[in-house]
Image 1 (cartoon, rainbow, N blue to C red):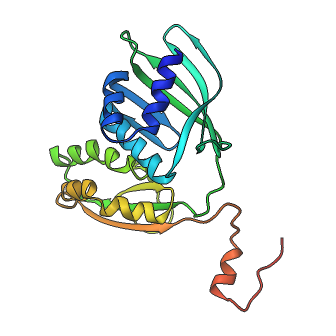
Image 2 (image 1 turned 60 degrees about the vertical axis):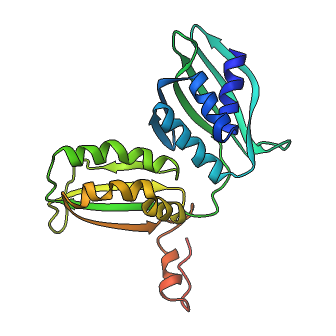
Image 3 (image 1 turned 135 degrees about the vertical axis):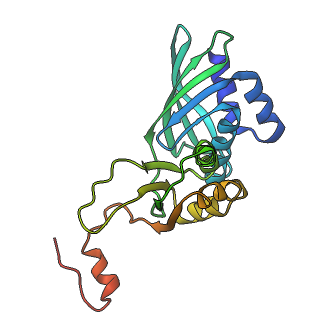
Length: 236
Protein backbone atom coordinates (compact mmCIF):
# COMPACT_ATOMS: atom_id res chain seq x y z
CA UNK A 1 0.00 0.00 0.00
CA UNK A 2 2.89 2.40 0.69
CA UNK A 3 3.99 2.07 -2.93
CA UNK A 4 0.57 2.97 -4.36
CA UNK A 5 0.41 6.05 -2.08
CA UNK A 6 3.82 7.14 -3.38
CA UNK A 7 2.67 6.70 -6.97
CA UNK A 8 -0.59 8.52 -6.21
CA UNK A 9 1.24 11.56 -4.81
CA UNK A 10 3.78 11.40 -7.63
CA UNK A 11 0.89 11.71 -10.09
CA UNK A 12 -0.24 14.97 -8.47
CA UNK A 13 3.30 16.35 -8.60
CA UNK A 14 4.20 15.21 -12.14
CA UNK A 15 3.63 16.90 -15.49
CA UNK A 16 3.65 15.94 -19.15
CA UNK A 17 4.69 12.46 -20.22
CA UNK A 18 5.74 11.46 -16.70
CA UNK A 19 2.24 12.12 -15.38
CA UNK A 20 0.60 10.34 -18.33
CA UNK A 21 2.76 7.27 -17.66
CA UNK A 22 1.88 7.28 -13.95
CA UNK A 23 -1.84 7.54 -14.67
CA UNK A 24 -1.70 4.78 -17.29
CA UNK A 25 0.20 2.40 -14.99
CA UNK A 26 -1.37 3.04 -11.60
CA UNK A 27 -4.92 4.29 -12.27
CA UNK A 28 -7.78 2.17 -13.60
CA UNK A 29 -9.31 3.45 -16.87
CA UNK A 30 -12.67 3.39 -15.04
CA UNK A 31 -11.38 5.38 -12.04
CA UNK A 32 -13.74 7.81 -10.31
CA UNK A 33 -12.54 10.77 -8.23
CA UNK A 34 -14.63 12.93 -5.88
CA UNK A 35 -13.57 15.74 -3.55
CA UNK A 36 -15.30 18.96 -2.37
CA UNK A 37 -14.25 20.76 -5.55
CA UNK A 38 -14.37 18.12 -8.30
CA UNK A 39 -16.12 14.98 -9.46
CA UNK A 40 -14.55 13.33 -12.50
CA UNK A 41 -13.87 9.93 -13.99
CA UNK A 42 -11.38 8.28 -16.34
CA UNK A 43 -7.78 9.12 -17.09
CA UNK A 44 -8.63 12.40 -18.85
CA UNK A 45 -10.69 13.57 -15.90
CA UNK A 46 -7.86 12.83 -13.46
CA UNK A 47 -5.34 14.66 -15.66
CA UNK A 48 -7.66 17.69 -15.86
CA UNK A 49 -8.08 17.89 -12.07
CA UNK A 50 -4.32 17.64 -11.53
CA UNK A 51 -3.79 20.39 -14.12
CA UNK A 52 -6.26 22.59 -12.28
CA UNK A 53 -4.59 22.14 -8.89
CA UNK A 54 -1.13 22.76 -10.32
CA UNK A 55 -2.38 25.93 -12.04
CA UNK A 56 -3.99 27.17 -8.82
CA UNK A 57 -0.94 26.36 -6.65
CA UNK A 58 2.11 26.73 -8.91
CA UNK A 59 5.32 25.34 -7.42
CA UNK A 60 3.53 23.53 -4.58
CA UNK A 61 4.06 19.81 -3.97
CA UNK A 62 2.02 17.04 -2.35
CA UNK A 63 3.57 15.06 0.49
CA UNK A 64 2.37 12.32 2.81
CA UNK A 65 1.48 13.42 6.34
CA UNK A 66 1.60 10.76 9.05
CA UNK A 67 0.98 7.05 8.65
CA UNK A 68 -1.41 5.21 6.35
CA UNK A 69 -4.30 2.99 7.44
CA UNK A 70 -5.22 0.13 5.10
CA UNK A 71 -7.24 -3.06 4.93
CA UNK A 72 -8.34 -5.29 2.07
CA UNK A 73 -8.13 -3.16 -1.11
CA UNK A 74 -8.61 0.26 0.45
CA UNK A 75 -6.33 2.74 2.16
CA UNK A 76 -6.70 6.12 3.80
CA UNK A 77 -3.97 8.66 4.51
CA UNK A 78 -3.36 12.36 5.06
CA UNK A 79 -1.52 14.59 2.61
CA UNK A 80 -0.10 18.08 2.69
CA UNK A 81 0.23 20.66 -0.08
CA UNK A 82 2.67 23.54 0.04
CA UNK A 83 6.06 24.84 -1.07
CA UNK A 84 8.69 22.09 -1.20
CA UNK A 85 10.45 21.70 2.15
CA UNK A 86 8.03 24.00 3.95
CA UNK A 87 5.07 23.42 6.26
CA UNK A 88 1.97 22.45 4.20
CA UNK A 89 -0.52 25.26 3.69
CA UNK A 90 -3.29 22.79 2.90
CA UNK A 91 -3.96 19.41 4.53
CA UNK A 92 -6.53 16.77 3.65
CA UNK A 93 -7.07 13.06 3.62
CA UNK A 94 -8.00 10.70 0.83
CA UNK A 95 -9.48 7.23 0.72
CA UNK A 96 -8.31 5.05 -2.18
CA UNK A 97 -9.95 1.83 -3.33
CA UNK A 98 -7.92 -0.45 -5.61
CA UNK A 99 -9.17 -2.80 -8.30
CA UNK A 100 -8.21 -6.46 -8.58
CA UNK A 101 -5.01 -5.50 -10.40
CA UNK A 102 -3.87 -3.12 -7.67
CA UNK A 103 -4.66 0.04 -9.64
CA UNK A 104 -6.54 3.02 -8.20
CA UNK A 105 -10.24 2.51 -8.92
CA UNK A 106 -11.96 5.08 -6.69
CA UNK A 107 -10.79 8.14 -4.72
CA UNK A 108 -12.75 10.05 -2.09
CA UNK A 109 -11.01 13.24 -0.96
CA UNK A 110 -11.63 15.46 2.07
CA UNK A 111 -10.12 18.81 3.13
CA UNK A 112 -9.01 19.39 6.74
CA UNK A 113 -7.05 22.64 6.43
CA UNK A 114 -7.59 25.19 3.65
CA UNK A 115 -5.85 28.58 3.43
CA UNK A 116 -8.06 31.65 3.43
CA UNK A 117 -9.09 32.60 -0.08
CA UNK A 118 -7.90 36.06 -1.11
CA UNK A 119 -10.51 36.40 -3.82
CA UNK A 120 -14.26 35.74 -3.48
CA UNK A 121 -15.68 32.78 -5.33
CA UNK A 122 -17.50 33.36 -8.61
CA UNK A 123 -20.58 31.88 -10.24
CA UNK A 124 -21.82 31.25 -13.75
CA UNK A 125 -25.61 31.52 -13.87
CA UNK A 126 -27.55 30.18 -16.81
CA UNK A 127 -31.28 30.48 -17.48
CA UNK A 128 -32.51 28.08 -20.16
CA UNK A 129 -35.84 28.01 -21.97
CA UNK A 130 -37.26 26.04 -24.91
CA UNK A 131 -34.67 23.28 -24.59
CA UNK A 132 -34.82 20.82 -27.49
CA UNK A 133 -33.97 17.60 -25.69
CA UNK A 134 -32.02 15.38 -28.06
CA UNK A 135 -28.57 13.93 -28.84
CA UNK A 136 -26.87 17.34 -28.99
CA UNK A 137 -28.05 18.40 -25.53
CA UNK A 138 -27.11 14.97 -24.17
CA UNK A 139 -23.60 15.34 -25.63
CA UNK A 140 -23.28 18.81 -24.10
CA UNK A 141 -24.17 17.45 -20.66
CA UNK A 142 -21.78 14.53 -21.04
CA UNK A 143 -18.83 16.75 -21.99
CA UNK A 144 -19.23 19.91 -19.90
CA UNK A 145 -17.88 18.56 -16.60
CA UNK A 146 -14.49 17.70 -18.10
CA UNK A 147 -14.17 21.30 -19.37
CA UNK A 148 -14.75 22.64 -15.83
CA UNK A 149 -12.28 20.45 -13.95
CA UNK A 150 -9.17 22.33 -15.06
CA UNK A 151 -10.60 25.57 -13.61
CA UNK A 152 -11.93 24.19 -10.33
CA UNK A 153 -15.59 24.36 -11.36
CA UNK A 154 -18.51 22.45 -9.87
CA UNK A 155 -22.32 22.38 -10.04
CA UNK A 156 -24.11 23.73 -6.93
CA UNK A 157 -27.33 23.91 -9.03
CA UNK A 158 -28.08 21.88 -12.15
CA UNK A 159 -31.66 22.25 -13.30
CA UNK A 160 -33.21 21.26 -9.98
CA UNK A 161 -36.80 21.83 -8.96
CA UNK A 162 -37.63 25.50 -9.48
CA UNK A 163 -40.29 27.06 -7.27
CA UNK A 164 -40.97 30.62 -8.44
CA UNK A 165 -42.04 33.14 -5.82
CA UNK A 166 -42.15 36.36 -7.82
CA UNK A 167 -42.44 36.85 -11.56
CA UNK A 168 -42.65 34.15 -14.22
CA UNK A 169 -40.11 31.33 -14.30
CA UNK A 170 -40.65 29.05 -17.27
CA UNK A 171 -37.11 27.74 -17.72
CA UNK A 172 -34.33 25.93 -15.89
CA UNK A 173 -31.58 27.38 -13.71
CA UNK A 174 -28.00 26.12 -13.91
CA UNK A 175 -25.27 27.48 -11.63
CA UNK A 176 -21.54 26.74 -11.77
CA UNK A 177 -19.14 27.70 -8.99
CA UNK A 178 -15.46 28.60 -9.53
CA UNK A 179 -12.63 29.61 -7.17
CA UNK A 180 -12.65 33.18 -8.51
CA UNK A 181 -13.93 35.34 -11.36
CA UNK A 182 -10.76 34.89 -13.43
CA UNK A 183 -11.16 31.10 -13.34
CA UNK A 184 -14.80 31.39 -14.44
CA UNK A 185 -13.85 33.68 -17.32
CA UNK A 186 -10.99 31.41 -18.40
CA UNK A 187 -13.31 28.40 -18.37
CA UNK A 188 -15.98 30.11 -20.48
CA UNK A 189 -13.42 31.28 -23.06
CA UNK A 190 -11.47 28.00 -23.09
CA UNK A 191 -11.26 26.08 -26.40
CA UNK A 192 -12.74 22.98 -24.74
CA UNK A 193 -15.89 24.79 -23.62
CA UNK A 194 -16.24 26.87 -26.77
CA UNK A 195 -16.14 23.61 -28.75
CA UNK A 196 -19.33 22.34 -27.07
CA UNK A 197 -21.10 25.69 -26.60
CA UNK A 198 -23.01 25.44 -29.94
CA UNK A 199 -24.56 22.17 -28.75
CA UNK A 200 -26.47 24.26 -26.19
CA UNK A 201 -27.05 27.54 -28.03
CA UNK A 202 -28.41 25.83 -31.14
CA UNK A 203 -30.94 23.85 -29.13
CA UNK A 204 -32.16 26.22 -26.43
CA UNK A 205 -32.85 29.83 -25.62
CA UNK A 206 -30.49 30.79 -22.87
CA UNK A 207 -29.00 33.68 -20.94
CA UNK A 208 -25.64 33.30 -19.19
CA UNK A 209 -23.84 35.66 -16.81
CA UNK A 210 -20.72 35.51 -14.66
CA UNK A 211 -21.00 37.09 -11.20
CA UNK A 212 -18.49 37.53 -8.43
CA UNK A 213 -19.48 36.31 -4.98
CA UNK A 214 -18.76 37.98 -1.64
CA UNK A 215 -15.87 37.35 0.76
CA UNK A 216 -16.32 35.39 3.98
CA UNK A 217 -17.97 37.43 6.70
CA UNK A 218 -19.87 39.68 4.30
CA UNK A 219 -22.94 41.41 5.73
CA UNK A 220 -25.81 42.89 3.78
CA UNK A 221 -25.09 46.34 5.24
CA UNK A 222 -21.57 46.21 3.76
CA UNK A 223 -23.21 47.06 0.44
CA UNK A 224 -24.23 50.47 1.79
CA UNK A 225 -20.65 51.74 1.77
CA UNK A 226 -20.39 50.79 -1.90
CA UNK A 227 -23.66 52.42 -2.90
CA UNK A 228 -23.26 55.47 -0.65
CA UNK A 229 -19.52 55.99 -0.03
CA UNK A 230 -20.12 58.94 2.31
CA UNK A 231 -22.57 57.06 4.53
CA UNK A 232 -21.41 54.80 7.35
CA UNK A 233 -22.87 51.31 7.60
CA UNK A 234 -25.00 50.61 10.69
CA UNK A 235 -23.23 48.84 13.53
CA UNK A 236 -24.17 45.33 14.65
